[in-house]
Length: 283
Ligand code: G3H
Ligand code: 13P
Ligand code: ZN
Ligand code: NA
Image 1 (cartoon, rainbow, N blue to C red):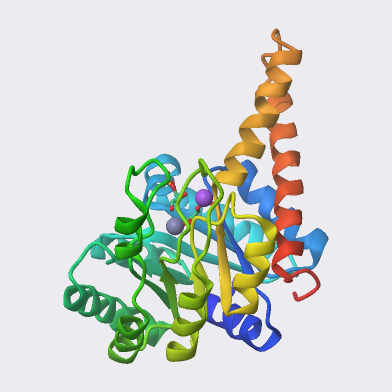
Image 2 (image 1 turned 30 degrees about the vertical axis):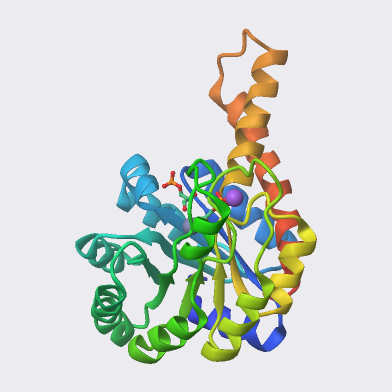
């Protein structure tokens, strides 16, 4: 069934594990996520970015996920990833999303607080959960010095203030992860994470999690991360499988013969992540 994200995250909080949030851009990926969740008997979050919505269309994404959720026994949530536009956040809620991220991380603190509150005001009465972002989670392609990177990290005292002011359900933080493929090995700032958790006591969200070594993911979950976002690893598995088929069978013209193996490869990577996050068997 289709469920809200807060429900999943509070259970994860009690159980000390994290729920995987996987970016869905097309039908094959939606099907792969739900299949993996079923095989692992795990709750799962499907998330669509603004890019996914403009690629596939809001109604297509919503209806595909609804069909997937309604035809399975595992809990499935539908979440907007990095919503930066208030009007679009509203459209997603109206369309049936059970959760939205309002990403005001590029705004000055007080504006981020004001906008996050505005989103919560319309979402909470109808049971839609809200994730906010504080600090700046960069892209791996951003060329920034380490000292500057740390300036973008989430400040624990500011996180406490932000959560008190907004009452937000979950918080995405910057502790050294980045979106996309890493060049070197990321080193997460665990002391900062522990401090943020201690001061906020709410489910913490880790973005840019593809490419973070398993050990560091486990440690982050031990310290209070309850939602782990994965996109790049899906892209790698999906497109990697497509490339393999096309290299082996250059004359293949049936899209199903190319996208079918891509879907299967996606199921496998998602199952691995679900087990890593400790959410297997928690449906
Ligand atoms: O947070 C970024 C996600 O990987 C989504 O990427 O905006 O290209 O869909 P996208
Ligand atoms: P990765 O692409 O690095 O897995 O990050 C995904 C993400 O944070 C989506 O919000
Ligand atoms: Zn992200
Ligand atoms: Na990443």
